[in-house]
Amino acid sequence: MARSIVPIRTGEDVVRVRQEVRRFAVEAGLGLVDQTKIVTAASELARNTLDYGKGGEASMDIVQNGARRGVRIVFEDHGPGIADIELALKDGYTSGRGMGLGLGGARRLCNEFTIASTPGKGTTVTIARWK
Amino acid sequence: MARQPASRLSALLSDSTQHILADWLAALKAAPDTRLSATELETQCESILTRLARACSDGNSGDIEAAAFVPLREMLDDISRTRATHGFSPTETATFLLSLKAPVFARLRAVLASDPEHLSAEMQSAGDLIDALGLFMMECYQRAREEVIIRQQTEISELSTPVVKLWQGILALPLIGTLDSARTQVVMENLLDSIVRYEADIAIIDITGVPTVDTLVAQHLLKTVAAARLMGADCIISGIRPQIAQTMVHLGVELNVISKANLSDAFALALRRLGKVVVNQRRPTPAEPV
Amino acid sequence: MDRIPILKLGEALLVTIQVDMHDRLAMALEEDLTARIVDHSAKGVLIDISALEIVDSFIGRTLANIAMIAKVLDADTVVVGMRPAVAITLVELGLSLPGVRTALNAERGMAMIKSRIDDAAMIATDEDEGGP
Image 1 (cartoon, rainbow over the protein chains, first blue to last red):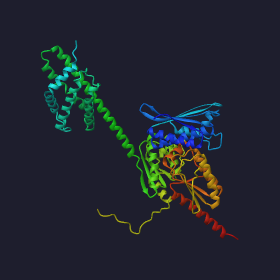
Image 2 (cartoon, rainbow over the protein chains, first blue to last red):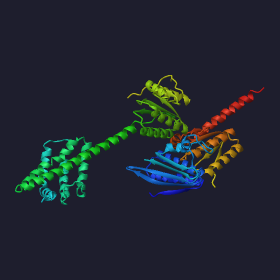
Image 3 (cartoon, one colour):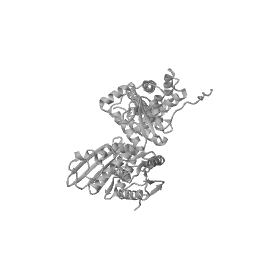
Image 4 (tube, each protein chain N blue to C red):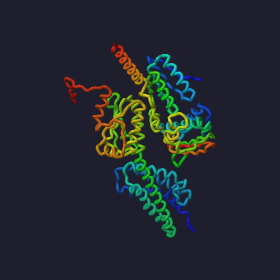
């Protein structure tokens, strides 16, 4: 399955990301609960990209690690970036209104989660879920 | 100059199939086995010889990994699997094939009587080839056994997470055995799906059969309870043994869910919560005659 | 833009969310519900999410907001039909839904709302009769 890139500019794009990630998760053979987890994590991150990152894009692939299949998604924006990543990953952190979840919660839903951010330059979050 | 050993073997096998087959079967039937019928045995031996002859006919050096050997390997794999499921030992399975050496050697000796130099070379390579095939059969056997074990494990884990409907609106989940991460996932999903299917108000999770409850297991249980509550049902935990209660307190695990000592207490509580009362009939219903 | 339909069911309002909600739709729902609760003096709001395959923190916030607004306007909120996979994911996400009662299905949810309406009515009657 070829890589898919979804631009994130509007609220409708967040829905599009969910649907596309779902498609990839099904293709990778993930069970229903695993699908739900990765799609929910992607939704959180897509929303972050939109609300805090001022828009960006999500690119997704099917990945293979020996006999295991999975789906990997990279969220990239060129927004303000996150100054203190450690703090952002803690539950309860928020720089806007909200329940203060987001990154920490999304991380718990994924098998792999890496984040790189430079204030003033942007943020890149990579997540993956395996079968 | 070494002659291609396989070419000689191939000719031998094609020309003397019936001879070798008869000798081979005679040796096998000397130790009769009720697990295999005579017809089955004959068919298998004949098919093996035919495919072996064909495999060697390409003049290859007896490399059983070669493409020419695929039909033979498939047949041997099938036979190994059948032997595995019928309770043959790995030795018996390999010996079956290794016993082909004697008749082949006898035939080689007869044909190459006048050529002693090449006789020993042919016997060596024929022996190597049959040994390799025998080892291959053992590996197939092992693989087949592993698959059986994995399948049985899956069946066991499915069997040990049954959900029981105790009453309209009340489910019981008697857990048996150790709870690891993977199993707990299955258990959780099973319970929540059952709550939807049976429209349950209360699910009783009985852990009498769970030997140890550490922080991880307790966390899994709590997550299950939290998920059930989010869906609109509630849970009661029952069957917490005294040692487990002690361990949990010492570990600092807080179970924010009602727990009862045993399943019947939990059931009684569930009935009360649903507003049900058990009353004595004036005359109990007698058991029906068999 | 489509708006999510709101039905009147006795003294309660019923909302069935069947589409993947984006921001504007969620905001519109909040506005519409707030208006309708007042219009009908509704005592309860039933939100059916049985068609939702995903509930992320944004949707969770929306549900919690609706519950808070309804409470201020003297109405109870019951969310029904949460799917098992969604429930498991929400627990893992660490999302709780403060102020939101849940029930297995619409029938149970309505029964819950109705019993609270009845309780409230009984108390009101007692207060009336206990006058000077």
